[in-house]
Length: 130
Image (cartoon, rainbow, N blue to C red):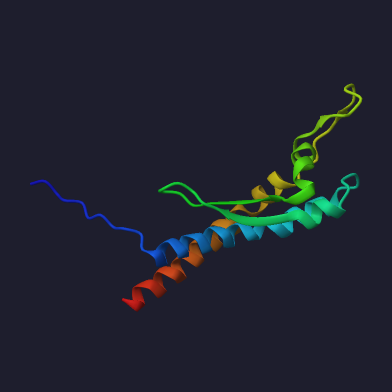
């Protein structure tokens, strides 16, 4: 006999819970990124530190995406600091001073735990309302 697979639709409450969970995980990166910038002796801190924000980005049908990074005026040069670049004289290489990737690597377990906890709490709330 062929087994039929149940299809579940994500309710508005479920979508909201996923959004909140993903954003909660992303927000855990803001402070470590700011701290990594402050630790660096050569990164000009002002605009860059103050520009680090977590935002929810609409994902596809089966995804939820959040971004964490520089916003505003600092957004145009943050990637140059993260990955390094050639200076304006076109001869000198300015080495990378990563502040985003280390924050993610050092906090990956915390982020996953936070997303799981927020989803579990939201799911419990949704199931108790029914």
